[in-house]
Image (cartoon, rainbow, N blue to C red; front, side, top):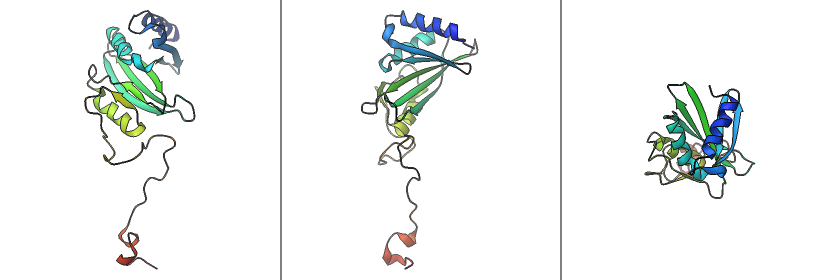
Length: 172
């Protein structure tokens, strides 16, 4: 398990890498024995590559988060595992709702393909450079992103034949 001092040391090492730099790592978080790096969205590829070199070779998941009413509103969380050391680290980034764009990590991490598509479909985060960014759970013509916090609760009304039109024998 990565403790808080080890997390700070890792963050300092990553800040020293030329592709990441001081602005690449915005902060760290160690909460309930979970280590997380908060990063700038444009540095996601470099940060994940640097972590891969340090043993975190398994991208377990990619999640979307909506921080409404805060801005930047939308977040993307990446969970990485070091299978030999049995360690886990989260990499978190946030993007504004007006321009929710993050570079895709699918070329380097093929397992991110469907997970990025799901975050796109449910939250509206656009993964720039994704090989096939399209809806994966909702129909192509669907408008909106159902996992956003401002999405109407209750979904779509169910249409039964008796309430489609008055000519079909609707009760009066």
